[in-house]
Amino acid sequence: MSTSTWTPFYWEPVAGTKERFMAGVVVQFEGKLSAHRILRDDVLDAMFGKTSSKPKNLIDSALSIALKHTEISGIGSISDPILGLYPGEVRSMDADSLNDAIRMAALMFSSLANLDHIDEIEAEDAPTQDETNRRLATEVREIVTTRRPDLSQYFNRNAQIVDDGDGVRIGFLSTRTALHYGVLHPARQPSSVKDARARIFELSRVAAFVGLNDASLIIGVPRTDDPTLGTRQRENIMRNTLELKREAASVDVNLRPVHSAEEAAQQTEALA
View (cartoon, helix red, strand yellow):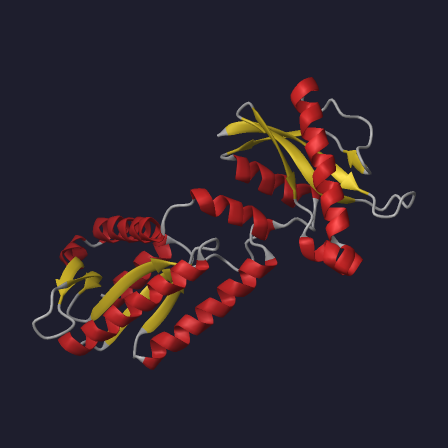
């Protein structure tokens, strides 16, 4: 964790009104400076309609100038407005990453921040879907086998889904249930949904082939009240979870959303 320092910049849409919104931020993290517009596009679109590109460009230009000035004179060196953007008080806080620093600035100083856009940027460096799923499955296995060593034999077992077919590895397969583990990643929802559908298919086939009464996809989802989620992400998570539940039910598979590896482990123990 490193200390991040930032200067918020506020925008006054109507000169002289003193009504200002946080439009962006210049951040210093691990010795590197960067500027970011965080005022949401939908806010500008609502205020200016078809001409919203003009204030967007104005804000972006002002932040670019602020960044160059800061690179020369240092963080907190700006005291006068730049193209209508007013610098705020310099703040510092520990952060795990640049995106974490931007998110904290947005959450602390602006209710209009574009958290969806921040997560889209972060998605470039996010683990792949397979890595995310594997991490959850590994954590669940460690928790369960610590409490229930007798269940260790059921993790990562191969099973056939068609006659004379190759075995498919199932996350947990006992005489009572077949379980897969997945994650609905807020910044990678399309790939998360695609992966979940594949796992639902495998579970459906295994349950039918082996003759099980229960087959479940235990899927990690963010809490809908998570303050770091953007409105669009929150809506997509709720919609995708409901759609996956319907699709799973249509082939006699249960979708079981959880918010942590501990919850997933408890579900595994209950179903085992």
